[in-house]
Length: 225
Length: 237
Image (tube, rainbow over all chains, first blue to last red; front, top):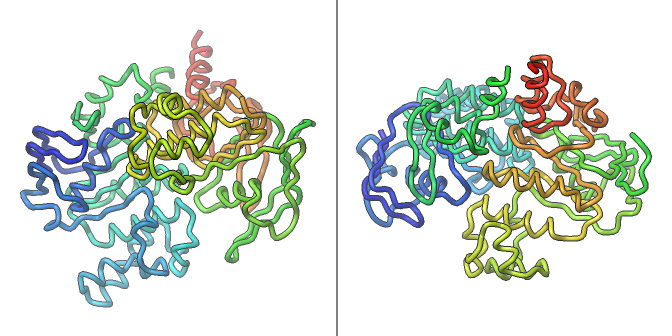
């Protein structure tokens, strides 16, 4: 699904990387290149050197849903409903399709009650859920979430996880600092110093991290019960 | 809540914004306070009110014995005043290299401040803030954007208790410092759950590891992951 070859960009230096479909958690220390990698996958930036493809195509030729940690940066429209509909407008979808798609996206993210609100009056967590609604309304081939859970409470994080798990998107890349969330992904990629150091199932990757602070807290608790 | 000489008090406070309101009435004594609440419940607004940058519709904030108070905002970009990282550190009147080494950013003094990653910027900001001589520190989502190792460093800094009153507004589910008091925002009102550990069972916003430990019958002495682990180990001992 995602292939990188001799990729060099900012601090990233990836000789070869292949990530299949499904839900992939991207983890690692601050400044290890996680967000840079996601931006390349989303087509927000182009690699300085090397190749990165999604299903054999350049990222900008793929429908990507992007949800950043600070969604304010990407909000364009005044109301929540307009913001969620905006991507569909730009794709020139029929009006009746847009309306039903927006309602479904709002419902799935638990943000229907925010429909008429101004995006600028939302809390940090509400902004994340609205940005997520706007992203999934596009039915993206790849859904990318960059630490979107960092401003969410437990219930909202659960809502987000339900939305992610229920998505038909062929690939979901989720950067997170919540290792319990990462432990429930199909696979985990651990970045360090601009390189993917460990790739595998959560069990395989966290096996290497068992003696560190990055081991999932719920796994530690389960081991004590 | 017990009597205390130095405290920050929300006195019959009503905060109003765009048809939304929050009532708060309570005393933040010396110690570490954790405040949780759902997304949009008003944590940031309350933090801003306690810091004196959001005017309440009614009631008042009383500072008793507190003359130096600071607020760490959720997004570290809002605090940046220096173009280069070394300028940013100097703006806090701190030694550049020593501070950068403490923040794990040694040798990055000539980098443009806003080219740091979000987590690195948060690390820099909190390192500078914790070195100040504050009577009260209000932290709005201090763990957001930090990796697990850095969250532990922040917890260690908080647990040193260099600042008499520390109020933490957070959603954090994995890494928390030892706390003295727990508060929650429920149905548009600030509710004090009491002092730790007695307050833990009533804490509806407790992190998952704590609720799992409680469900297994454990009685953690504080709110950290290791407190939950130790409580479970005691059960089996």
